[in-house]
Image 1 (cartoon, one colour):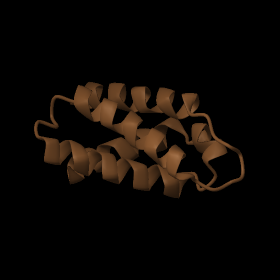
Image 2 (cartoon, one colour):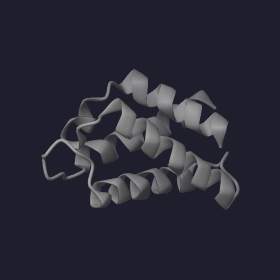
Image 3 (cartoon, one colour):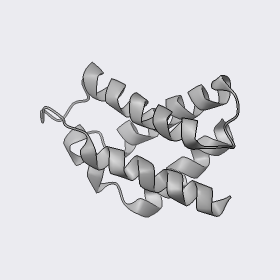
Length: 95
C-alpha cells in the first residue's frame, strides 16, 4: 500500500509541475478544472479506489488540499513531496 501511495503521489506531483497558470496568484476555474483532471487520472490508477464515489471523494479532497497548500497556483509545484504524500494518504483515507 505504501508503494501505491508513493507512486500516486509522484504522479500527482508531476501533474502539479506541468500545470500552466496565468500567474495572478488566484486559482481560476480553468486551473481548478486542470487540478481536478489530474487528480481524477491519479484516482483512476489507484486500485484501492474501486467505485466512482470513492474516486470523486478523492478528487474533491485532493483539489481542496492543493488549493490550501498553494493559494498561488503558480507555486503549486513547490509543495514538498512529503506534503504531497501526506495529502494523498489523507484523501485516500477519506475516500
